[in-house]
Image (tube, rainbow, N blue to C red; front, top):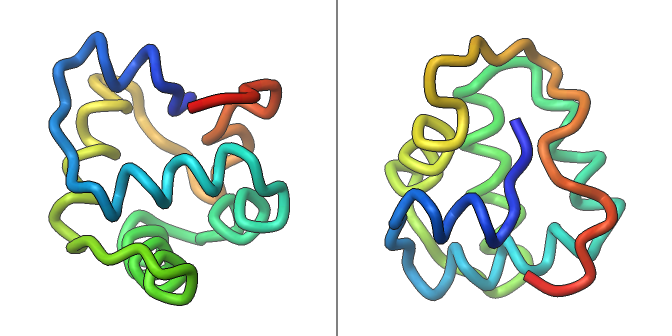
Length: 93
């Protein structure tokens, strides 16, 4: 599962400004990516996303995060911890 601007746009996913800002941050910040990749399960990933978002001034709900995960994963089974949730070469979100 890779989260990129293209996949979010193609799936017509409407997200809040706070979640959009957080996704932009994590696409550029290797440390945030590593923290999120270490989540042992989906609930932990959701909680950690909301927590890290708030710490970085980005406010959004757990439900929004779950929606992004569900839309991005489609029918693929997600194995935690996640190895490659974010495309590391994306310069601009």
